[in-house]
Image (tube, rainbow, N blue to C red; front, top):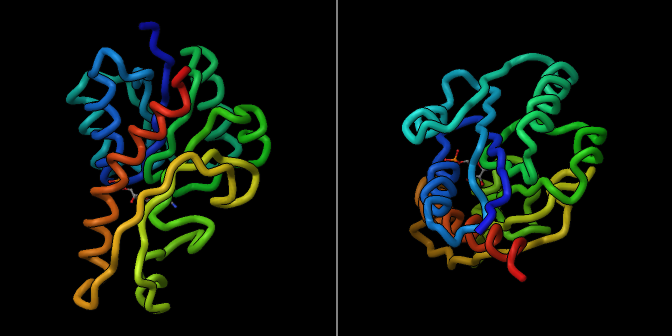
Length: 186
Ligand code: GAR
């Protein structure tokens, strides 16, 4: 199959990146990770890019400059889809518009609930019985684009932010690959 070319944006540990790379080694998985972009030099995720010989860029500069340089690279490499995987910078409206419909993100809550940061703390504070993760298209508003897939988990009274993060991230790996398959199926 002809795979679509993906670029994954990260800022941190990159475990979702690792999971996407693993899925993409399957012949039938619709994308190939052709580029990894990090705004954080110390992002552990860069090590996965290195391990799998995927070109990567580290760039920590102001948003305008960052987006200008990265946009050029994406065009150069003919990237079809951008997967945000723990990328903790907000992309400008202009950048999102330029890639309209082709940027997806994973968020650690059941959107539209708990947009933004510190989701696990807030979920516990409000005594939610369930939480989970959502893969969605990125639009011009934070965590508000069309939902592709959600995965839900129960919360028990022993859970804390650490256990919830572990459980939710375990679901994220499945959710991200399923969402990518769903986007390109047909
Ligand atoms: C993931 O849990 C992802 O949902 C979250 O960052 C983590 C990155 O982990 N993203 C956000 O909070 C975006 N608002 P990873 O670097 O190990 O994939």
